[in-house]
Image (cartoon, rainbow, N blue to C red):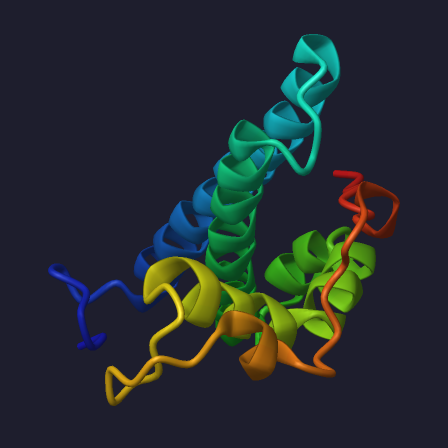
Length: 147
């Protein structure tokens, strides 16, 4: 019996979980790209309050994308079909993992806990992220994925 599968069919269960994760990945990427498009259409300046708020949501979504990448990769170990699907995401995966630590630190310290560490002490986000790599301008955000 397959762990977690209600009917014991491991192959279909794993494939279904893979496609659920791929759906989440795709939805998150579309939300991020739509944000960039609407920023341009509405002439939202990056430093404006609306620009900062949408950037914070983008960082949180990028963290969720990175988590989905981890889930997707866990399904690909012994499945050639799934590996082939993931090969199309390789450029983006490389980009996302390059900034993974920075995205997570920025999400946690600047947005989710707003200048508080895990012990609830005041710790400004700029001291937390310090020298961690995060893309600071949109030109650094290569979100191109070809499927």
